[in-house]
Image (cartoon, rainbow, N blue to C red; front, side, top):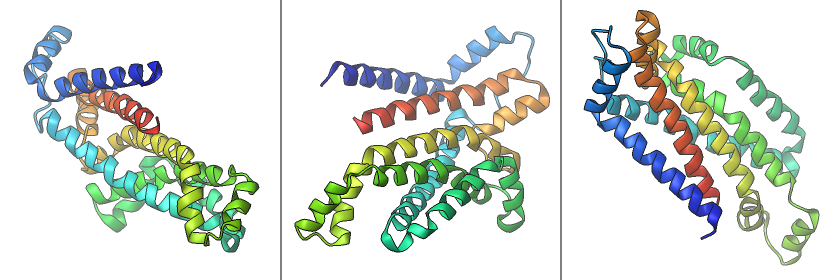
Length: 240
């Protein structure tokens, strides 16, 4: 194992330990918040434990990221084939438009169709997370030299064999980079879902802003930030 990989692994392990302590060590939260906010009577967010909020947040991110990954990679495959190249500008423009809309606007538009809670939030995150995956996957396919395509065809590979044995493996670093960006964006953006009852770490943040209680706000913002750093380190290890 290289020195860089060792450093990344240690960094990931430390983040994981800190993250688990923050999730499950309730007494630590009480003591820390009493020290930071001695004037506040209500310190701990009462509606759910931090572990429950983290689990709700992870479900939002996981479902939306899986949908974004499958859709983004599939569209990238289709628009980089000979029969779909004419749709490449359209796919790129549509995905860019999807990310141009603020998440709150996407949520507001999806609520009349999907109601409140989990489903519209996942839909908004799904739309918001497609762009980096789609663009990176397209860049990965386009970076493959023509000689490699010619060699694959020269040994008698079918288009499907060439896709799975040559193109996807060579484009994998680009795809993973897009997924990493998308997941990290969704971790932060998922906090907006609390405004329509989706729960997650946005719930104490919203409650803290409404009641001017920074103790609540910290219980949502700190785990969300650590989660983003943790997943970034995880994808670094996965890419290596």
